[in-house]
Length: 80
Length: 80
Image (cartoon, rainbow over all chains, first blue to last red; front, side):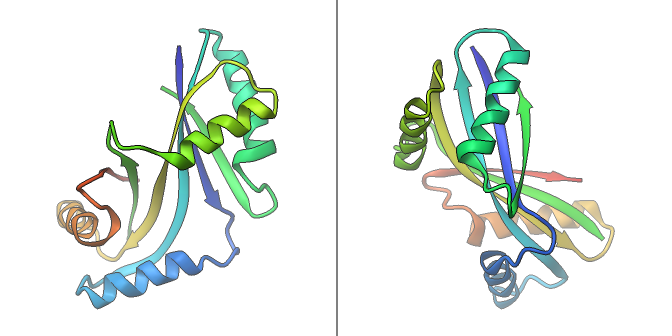
């Protein structure tokens, strides 16, 4: 079995109201010196088999088709 | 400036309906051999200063107070 972690983050330049809200909330809570905050998603996926090349190709297809909106989001795949 | 990535994931045993939905959707899209899927959150945070120990302590406090619900979620901090 292969375990993978897919991280989906907003592309630079895409507005992130959720991140901005967190920035504001951290300031309100008294945390100084906090710069930009950006929020993203992470998916921990288990795949059958042990062919890492196939797993990586499958995961890339999953990201393109379902997990990420490639117009506004980047994704990174790491096998663990 | 210090850049940090905080990853918040559900603890083992906590139900993850969003992950289950993704599992189902991947199956429907024709991806075979997909086991469990768990969804989490990632925060990319910029902090002023260059004191890594202080940054790590601050980030831990941010996770405890705002970013993670430590009853059901784990968090991991990595400075980049």
